[in-house]
Amino acid sequence: MLHQIGRLYILTHTLRADPGLRDDPGYTDVLQSWQAPIGAAILTAWGLPERIGEAVANQNDLLGGEIEELQPLPKLLSAAILRNRPSSGPFVRQSHPDADERMQSVSFGDNSFLDLVAASRGDIAVMQQALAA
Image (cartoon, rainbow, N blue to C red; front, side, top):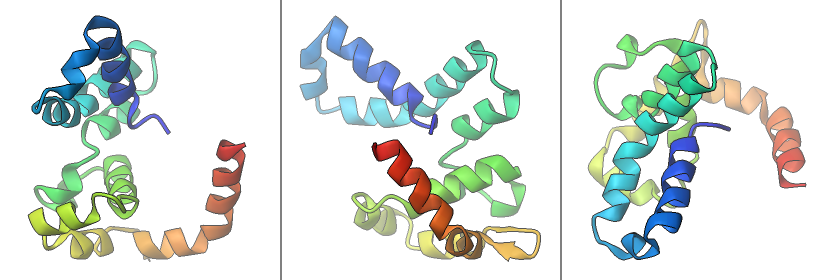
């Protein structure tokens, strides 16, 4: 739930400082590239465990580097973000034709990420309903 706290921080500060910045063509790129490290810094400042800040900082690492090198929490967050990017799906697949393969290769012990998602479908629906209320 906190993986985009950096985005919220940037958006609110931009709105206060100069709302016109959001019309700048480079704003989206800055927002995308800065939101993860800023989010990690916020979570660290709030005193959350370091591993949570690291997961937020590395939330897009599934699309780069070796999957085996990722720690479990960043790997899980990165796979979840990739799975739930319907609006950017075509862009992700154009830039990273192996995105689906990378997501499918994520496993925890004997269970694949997608198997865990399928097994947790009911719990996920309950959480989504609770957050939407």
